[in-house]
Length: 248
Image (cartoon, rainbow, N blue to C red; front, side, top):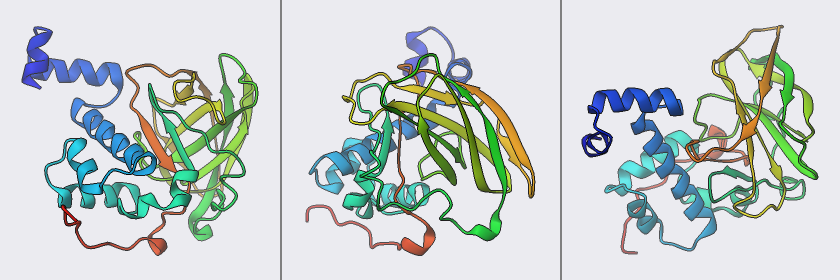
């Protein structure tokens, strides 16, 4: 941090504040998100040894990485290599983008597959795109954090037209982040991607409809890269695996 701040002639504290204002999260959280994204991409799209992946994304301890990955993502790195996880992956970054097709999602649980007893509210609204994406899909979802690592608690796929109305039912009561992503299925890795986020958290309450409006824009080079899988990673399907032993 001190080295980067010195390059632009400001103090580390001032640099951190400016970075957070511009990007939306702190430099430390941004770096963590970049590392997690790269780990997910290499787990799904490469044959690299898991231990090599851990070290290649900046972690010195395999145990620390495995614990953090499992807590944030809902499954271990080894479980993340299951075929159904990669097939249902949604990814957005400056050089790796992916939107699963309906066929690839055929085996994934739908948006209402979570514990119905807690899902007592709904989120409705309108999303405006700067342009329609022919044959494109728009994923709108409710997440537990501004930098999602796990599947959304509620989501819908919709056509990527210029103006989209949506309803997300069975949303648990609480404070949530809303995000929308749009691109063509099967588009090249460097294809244009549209993103949209709300600058504030949404409050969902029992028996109430929360209404909102969101504008989408083209993905910027400074946007936090994101990769989530719509495969079921609920606690009923997750088990803690033994620490990886490198060299095997």
